[in-house]
Amino acid sequence: MKNIALTGGWTGGHIFPLLSLYNYLKDESDLSFVWFWDEDGLEAKVAEEHHIAFEHIPSGKIRRYFDLRNFYEPIKNISGILWAIYYILSLKIDIIFSKWWYVSLPLCIAWFLLRKKIYIHESDSVWGLANKIIGKIATKIFYTFPNEKIDSEKHIFVWQILNSDLIENIDKVGELEENEKLEVLVIAGSQGSTKIFEQVSTIVNNLIDINFTIILWEKNLHFRNDFEKCSNVKLYDFANQKELGEIYKKTDIAITRAWATTLWELYFFGIHSIIIPLEWSAQNHQEHNALYFKENFGSDVLNENSQLNLEIFR
Image (cartoon, rainbow, N blue to C red; front, side, top):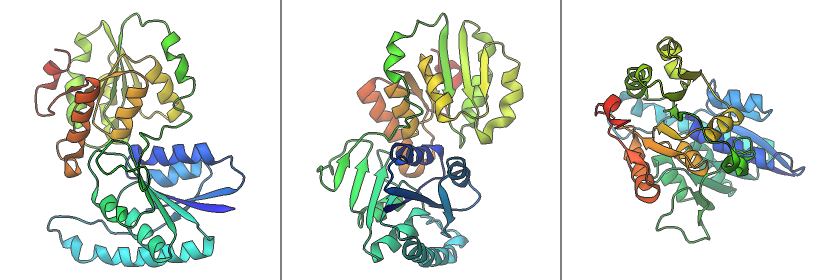
């Protein structure tokens, strides 16, 4: 029996690839899983829904700017390392698979101190700080985007990890009947997407020859009243992976942020993307993700500070 630790989260783009990996391996009789992350987040909810053991690890965010929290939050990482060592030994963990974000750091340091295998997956075209540090001690690093480090030994190019629920019957997409109207999906994510929903809400009523599917996610539910009035809008507060796969099958064009997971999902379903990168993303990774898709797959890229209500359907 091999015991595998999963760690990663903060956004769905990093939670769902971990869930995808679990879904592919969960039926293996010689594998067991435990998810490590901060408490009271979406990660704990997803783990509970899929019957994955969950343990809370204390951790402190690393900020590359002056903040009073920088004086005491690193102490959380020290306690996180100690707790991780305890869990590794008591649960007999063999391998850790890490996605992203600061909670991963104390866990992976503990794994390294105990000489356990560390595998990480970097979703974006630009590394996050935690993955930059963990990458130096990782056993193997898997990449979504091609880059100069790939050597097929430690640095391995694998594209995106897609959920089996999401891509069920994806091979039949080409057999579907053509849509009577243009089907546009707005999938901007939960964080920092207010500008997009504000702009889209001003135009949907004037585009009655287009059907819109809009997924609000947790932080944008206050837009529900605006979109419910529109007869050409199908509205979701949240969509699980199976629901999202069905939505993708009928979508022609998607208006999206530059979250790597979403971009690759749209690509695999053959959906043209209009990408509006989040201006203040760490290391400007969304801009880099968007430019990669523009150069390689012909995606459109818009500036979030432009008049989106005019630019989107120009």
